[in-house]
Every structure is written in structure tokens, then in C-alpha cells.
Image 1: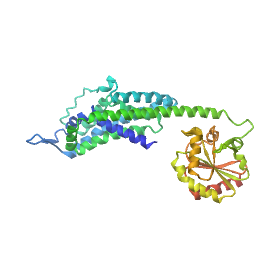
Image 2: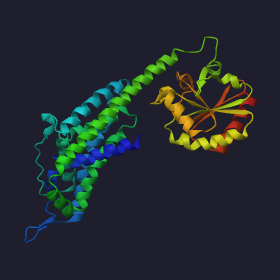
Image 3: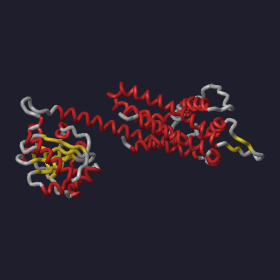
Image 4: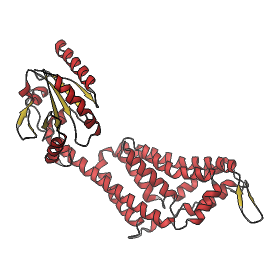
Length: 391
């Protein structure tokens, strides 16, 4: 789960609150929620009883939350059927977000997104109570949906394409709901602010449009990258070991190359343990771990430490990796898995991941995540015990 994305979607919820179809109506909602818990002095100034307004606001927010719970459940149910179409959904959804973003920027207009559904529902709001506040929140959240649709659609699309997508809906809902709670606590000050800042709407629309376009481009980029990886994995899987050859022996004899374009095979180091560190240039934890690995490598005469990168998983490819390795000057030999075969068969999907291979080419053990020097020593001792026992 990407916390930057969650933050962006939370901001979209806040912008929805500030949108022209919600913010101007806040005084009306507050008036409903206050019911008869307000007083008007001789000068016409309205004073609200904070505790009562906040209580009804809590139930109002609970009603809004129900809408998002239902949306999250719907997205979860749909995801079960749509998982196999993630890339298609991302490309179509990203394109729609870009269109919505251009609409928000005012480059063209989509009529339905400028409308608000107003259900005819009489609840005698002057006599407000908690149940009515809850129903009011639920009914009016349905009414906002078309108008805040462009921003809300982003959260829903992310929910459909991510295993923990419900968190995106929760982030959006929080961004929309928290300002309402602030209204319940600081009613008079918030209403005064709204009255003075009527020109805020045009800026909200511009910011919303930019954010939607950025998210749309992000979804299309991710989908394109995913399609490329699927094609790459399909191509790699076709380069399988021979019928009489085990995967271990196939990988042990696999021809790779180092950063100086010299051909290398793991079998070149036969007779020594090999510590194979799968890493990436963009991985912060890999960078933090490397000095510990360097110190470990200096002390081990019976172990060869190798770093391995996959150019197919790096934006800049081989040249960027070579530049990165030269700049870091770690002193550990680096190999390039150009065809992504070793990464594929070792199931590398997180970084760093470390494998230890026996002097005869047997893959003994592996660890996901960053380690320190002591951890490397413990891992090697464990691998040696596994090698001796033959388990």
C-alpha cells in the first residue's frame, strides 16, 4: 500500500468538501443539524450549542460513512470478478480520470457532473435528533455523488485495482468527513470562514483537475508497466530448463554478465558458498543494507558475495544500473540478469532478497528484507548446517 497515494486520495476527500456542490450548503446542513439548539440575539447573530450540534454531526457523518461502506463492499465484490482485467480497468479508468480532470479545469464541460441529485425526502428537520441526522447524512451523500463524482471515481477505480483497495475509499471518506466534524466543533468560526471565502471554489476546481490528471496518468503508466512485465514473464517462462535438468542446475549454469560486460555464471564460483543479494537501484532498504553486506564480505574467505540487478525492472535499464553501481563503489561484484530469468525463477517480488547457494550449486535458504552483518553471519551458519544435514 502506497501511503503517498493514500495521502493524495485523502486530499481529494477534503477538496470534495470544499467543492461548489458541498461547501456552499454547509450553513444549511449545520442549521438542520442544530435544529432548535441555537439562539439568535438582538443583532441577528446566531449562536449554536456546541455539544448538541457535534452529537448530531457525529450521526450525520455516520450516515455519510454508510454510503462509503456500501461503495467499498460493492468494489470488493466487483474486484473478485474483475481481477483478471486490472490492466484494462486501469487504462480505461486512467483515461476517464484525465477527462474528468480536464472537465474540472474548465477546458470543456460534462453536464451530468455539474448536477446534484436532490431526493425528495421530508424528515421535518426542524425537530432534529440522532436518527434524523444519520438519515440526512446518508440521503445527502447520495445526492452529492454526481457532483463530486470525478474525485470519488478515483478512489473507486483504485479500489478495483488494488488488493487493499478499501483503504483508498476509507482515505477519501476521511478527507470528506473530518471537515464535517470540525464544523460540528467550531460551528460559528467555520461558517464565518465559509461566508468570507466564497472565491475558494475556483481554486478547488483547478487543484482537483490537476490531481485527477496526475492520478489518471499514474494509473495508465502502472497498467502499461504491468502489461510489459506480464509479457516479459511469459517470455522468461518459455526459457525453461530441459526435461532432464533441474531448475537449480539450470540457474547455477545460467550465463549472466557483470557491469563490465564480462560473461559470468554462478558455477564459476564452484567450491565456495555464494551469497546472492537481489537488489534494485531505487530500494532505500537495499542501500541501507549494503555497508553491512560489504563488511560481512570482507571477512569471509569461503563465501562469494554477489549483487544482482534486473535491467527489465529498472526504468533506466543496464546503463542506469552501471552508472549507479560505479557511483556507489561498494566493492562487491555486480551481475545483471538481463533476461530476468534468475529473478523469475527465484520468485523475487520484494527487495532486498538474499539467497545462499552451496559450493555444489544447491539453493539452501533465503531471507526477504534488509539485514545487518550479524544477520548475514547467522544466515550463513544456518545454510551451512542445512548443507551438512542435507535437509
